[in-house]
Image (cartoon, rainbow, N blue to C red; front, side, top):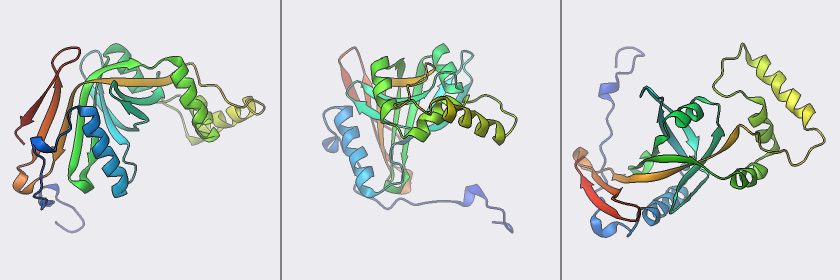
Length: 219
């Protein structure tokens, strides 16, 4: 460290956890294993344990990433909601594959998912949108997500216009350009930090429509 400058290469955390992750610890399927770890993350008190980094790529293969919140998961996949005209929405329309990363580093754990992306049916979108706070519903209508805007005042004015528009409407309907996306996993990897960077990594990998194998990966 020089003055007030932090040198990233000098930042180092040694994982002391020796319990690790073994094949005997794994559930029979990725969904049950994810449920165990997600429940543990919630119980541990991690801030926003459902936060995940969503990686997408455009039609030319140029990647982008952002953090969004997981809203549902089941044996079929992982669901989040977004504006379909946002950058991720446009990229997923052109290239319907994504990665998810759940960074539970306080527990020395990480889950990484890759898979195909499909839209959830409209009834599911409407049901989730109806459960959101009214302010969030208005925000979904007001924000032209990922578009360039001149200033904060423009956004506030758009929100006020939505407040006025829906003043006598309850519940507010979901915008037609807003909805749910489901990541149908081809791989789900569970990473457990170990000492000396010799971490444990196990990947559930789809082999066909119904079959999966579990593989240990080198750290």
